[in-house]
Image 1: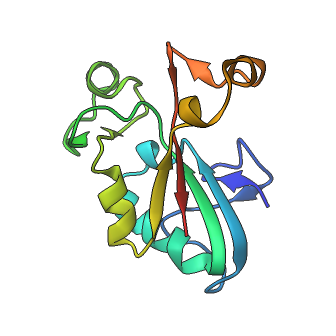
Image 2 (image 1 turned 135 degrees about the vertical axis):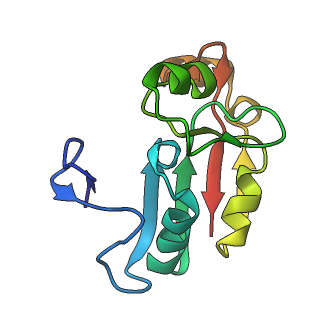
Amino acid sequence: MCGDLTATFGDEIIDVTNLCFGDRSFDAVICNHVLEHVADDRAAVRELRRVLATGGWAILLVPDVEGQSTIEDPSIEDPSERSRLYGREDHVRKYGRDYLDRLADAGFVREAIDLADELPAHLIACYRLEKFHAVEPIFLCR
């Protein structure tokens, strides 16, 4: 199943903060560059944890994790200011390393996997995993 809030990137309209699926419905969940757009990302992460089956896994990717702490201010609505602070006008935050704490707060056992340490350079190039001179980590949750 694939979708988003407007069904732009999939067939289903899905509100990640209020999923219409039962508890433990999925063995695997991939949430790719979504949470930085969601006003209440903590609610979204709790919902993703709720629908993940016992023994399942989730990959919850967010872009450009930098610094120690997440930067966010819900009062900022100006697109140019969001772009300046968060990297894009439709982002509502820029995650820091405390992203892992947010995942743990929702009940996930989480791991950041640095693909630059795991894969040889030719595979990173082949799969175009490097962007802006960095390889994005994989955030694996169970």
